[in-house]
Length: 372
Image 1 (cartoon, rainbow, N blue to C red):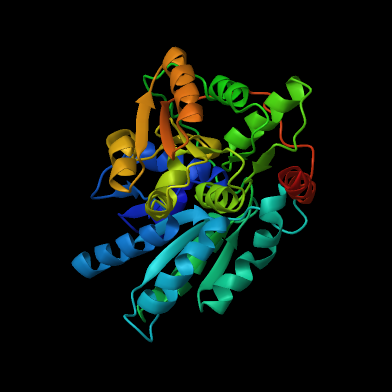
Image 2: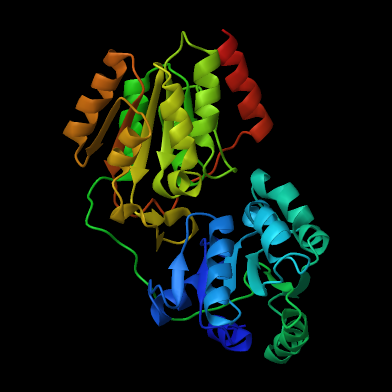
């Protein structure tokens, strides 16, 4: 099915969401149709944020909005769906479009396996009627499903299109780029050099994949690194938990701008606790690159000022390798919570691999290393 056909079938003129690689066709279509336009299309920080934003749209217009997301974001919408949208509360109608990662029988990464198993069940448990779109779904079948959905929406209920891998198509190209010059993989190599044998907690997506490949290329052990392959936005909190309980070790956190935005309150908790042995590095390319390259709002905010306002005693931004190396060494020597924002370009190697160890092996090796 063409992405523009699905948009026409929903009949909506406002979309908000968090990008997903399985919904790349829809995301690209939205960018070519609307761009980032607060009247029609907003990329939000997390899926709960999207849901509340869409609820506000409905309250102001009386129209039905669309919220798009990867199925990993279902957990973030449970609270607003149950306590805000539900017809026993405010009865706010909404259409969800959900990319189905980890669908049973389809090979996927470990962080998607269980989420894929419970994707439809979670929606059903939340009293959200679903319709699954596959490669074989016809426009007529999707239209018929939407007609059934309209009856439910008129009753203040929510509905969801669950999109299987490869089910949506969009033929027009979209180029995502920024004016930064530093490559993320090289940034991570510089961080690994500075960290030495210190523990590193890295965020979900290509950052963790590039850290894994850096260790492999250098014939180094992977025991130093905890790869947060799922749980987007939580790597800094994991690092905080490690830092508090291993005060004799310097802990590094490699984060991304989209992840920081997703659960930004964690910065306030970090700043309030201010562990002296934690270095928080935010690689900022202003994009959800791992899932296609759509923009975040990180290019429009001051992450350094936010960190300082949250209580970080040290926070700087760099856009060159000379400055990065200088600040990495300074952070190592000062024994105080530090944040380094690194301005990064968009892009990665086409042949970038994935971790060859299992998530369980990663955890066990990291824990053994921390216990040494």
